[in-house]
Length: 148
Image 1 (cartoon, rainbow, N blue to C red):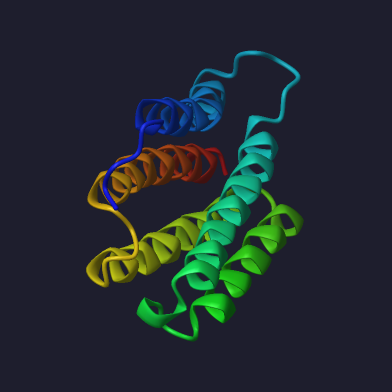
Image 2: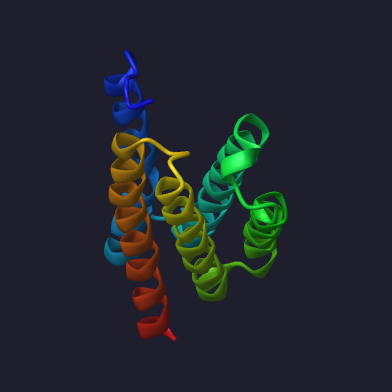
């Protein structure tokens, strides 16, 4: 299960997927480029990525239901809906909701890895990307909190 010929591509795309949040955090802290609401962009992008990850959990359940908990479909849907709500909430609190979403998604990943559903290389990749994503969202939250 750990063998995947396209692993380098998956790894590259995953790390590339963190770049928009890194750029948003830099923009929030530096104020550049002017005229861009980097907090909104971060929340909108984060919601899309969280929903994408929730879809991975659906796929895991659909293809390996015996090793997944039955509540995986419900949990991943609830997280996707919370990510969607983060866009409505916006700002600092939208980022906070997304931090919780990504933390919960990773908690689900821990369980899937423990049951042998997620291969080790993918679990490690998800852990590294989650650390980056949560760190960037927290950097945005801290800056937004300092502003106001």
